[in-house]
Amino acid sequence: MALSQIIKQPTMKLLEEKFLALSIQSCSAIQTRHKQVAPQPRLRHPTWLTKKNRVIHDDFLTADNAEFVQEVTKDKYEIPPKVELPKNIIEWTPKLKRTGVIARKIGELPLWLKTGKKISTTLLQVLDNHVIKYYTPEEYDPPRKRPTRIKNKAGCLLLGAQATDPTYLTKEYCSLFKNTGLMPKKYLARFFISPDAVLPTGTPITAQHFSVGNYVDVRGLTKYRGFQGVMKRHGFKGMPASHGVTKTHRRGGNIGGGGEKGRVWPGTKMPGHMGNRYRFAKGLKVWRINTKHNVLWVSGIAVPGATNSIVYIYDTNLPTRKPLKPLAFPTYFGLDDNVVEEDIYDESLQRFSDPTIVFQKE
Image (cartoon, rainbow, N blue to C red; front, side, top):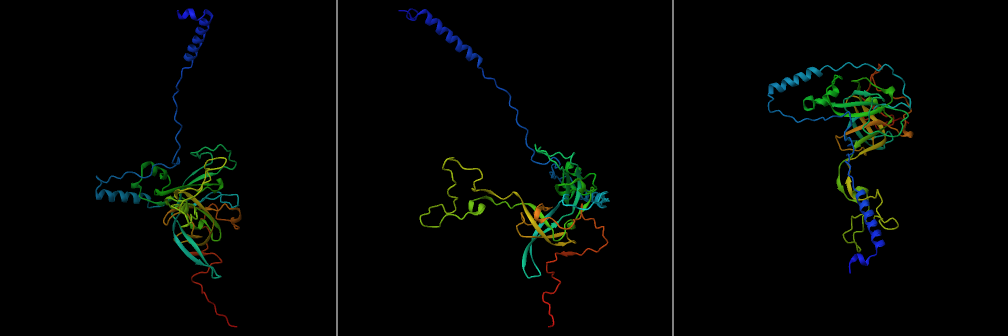
């Protein structure tokens, strides 16, 4: 018996309609692929900092040519540029924000108070800081645009430190110092300041930018320790040495993955890379200043960074450590006729030249 005879006519027509509907749906549901545009890459370097070091090829440079290049460089930068004083020198107020300085961490030394107490200090040498450029709040274009609205906009002051040979630098990097009359600097840093604290190009900044007795904040790159465990990285105590403990002496132990959530919470203290991060040491008191070598003695030995590393010094922003006396604003120019001592000490410090024992008659 034929299949058409078994299935009745109305049933065949219903099946044909269903098959036709399925075929139409399958044709209409064709996948369309669109070209995906890659997101804009993030800037790893600031917009004002170009490539600094270049590949040096001295194969075709003779000794006479090298001496000639050094003479031309010396003649060009031998005479320092004339620095003009700011037109609007006003008195400092707590609402005004000054520039910071670029310094080098050179070591640690103890000092003694007049009471006989010993304190530990860190020596920071202020390098030959000079103003390179100033960006007004309207000109400054940050790499990252913040959606929040900033009420008090600040200007950006570009500072350079430690003059270096321009023959080892790229042409684009040397163009930053073209109109300054200064030798190219090895280190650059930007500081956000109040518009009233602007400084002319080429203005030198010394250690007398800060004053003894005030407090500063120091920012530096911590030492890189590599991949470390929880005991060295976070100061964990560790497991017991015996009594049933097997191969878990320096392990982190339970990380709290059970319970209702059943996952590891973000920020859990675990092994990982330690160091190589920029950190702040805030509220450090300036105990002593050497004006000849531009050295600051600041309290503590916890200044981030290794010896001979570069650090950045700012006026502290802690509300309880604000200066009581007006600061040198916008920086120290040496306009006073007073003779500046080579070493400036805090009032509570014991000077090495003063006697330690005083005999009095009864």
